[in-house]
Length: 482
Image 1 (cartoon, one colour):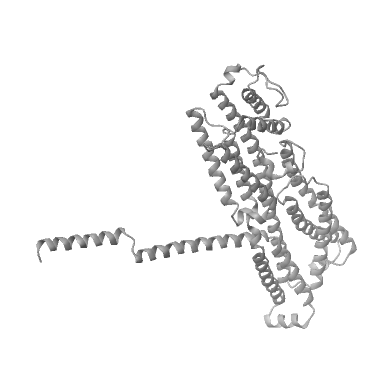
Image 2: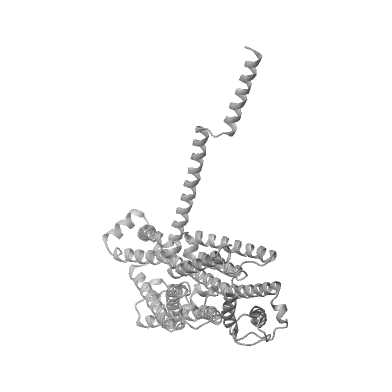
């Protein structure tokens, strides 16, 4: 082999080594494709898990109610049959039958809960969890895209072109923010899972809608900015925002600059005329007009931020109350399980259930009357419904506790020899039914505190509306379009 052939062979080996390292081969393509498929599979599995958890979260009020109903029915219906006696003999102790009925109720509850959650999964998506917010978000997204298309591109559709380098830089920045927010909103509206069940996903998208609207104020035509300023002034006039006077003063000065009237006062755009400290020539300067648009953008941000915080308060109150209701339900079920393990006679369980139902009905009736008279113009993301689901647990437990206290107090006052066992305390006495009903009304006093808080939230929202229409009070109208 000559030196030239040896050099050529070395060069060929080097080229193959480089190609095998840097150039994609079929084997490398297969490995990369497999890794991509595994990543997609893991992401899909994670998404399915999130949807399943969201479905279980949405149906969380069901398990405690179903567990109590099934367990009590099984214990009562089988209590005096030969089956219960055989179970006690097999178990070897008195509480065996109670343990069997508890297990039966628990298994049946878990099975039904999983089945219901499976059918609820399609309703954990953004488009189905809250139709109103989804439709309004889509409407605002279309408006934002239209604004971006007409105000952010150098085309015949663009109504105003930048006049200097500063305007172009600010316009590009504002349009970039708005475009990025629209992209995130578009992606979010296709989502599924826990954020939409809890309502936090909608609040996050409304934040993005507002940030995009505030950014586009700096690039929209002055006529549009003045129209938005009119709405913002009407929202500030009677609002509960603590610095509304300062915001009104800034907004009116900004409008005076943009209006550029010959007298130094803007015409009839706003409710209260104001004298602009700048001359007509100074108001016509591009940098002063840009400052005026920035003031309008900041004012809109303050209004949106105030309303967003109120909506977050409503969402947090709803979620906390739903969690508390679930804890109360499982606590009630735990008390029932403890009683069954103690081998309480079935008729005692029946009377405890009767007292619980009497108290729950009394509490629900009182709460329902209050809810019927509540203003429903503002969507509260299910807070009123959650209160109704919460009050029956409180009223039922209060009724059972009231019967227990009354019976024990009667025993102590009379100094009688009545037994202090559950069979003697929870007897079939008409007087105790009245006690259960009275104690069932007491939790409504606690619920009223929650109602007052929710009413304050709604009042804050109404105070920042630009009109008294029902549509304006919906959550989607919090972005300055009211």
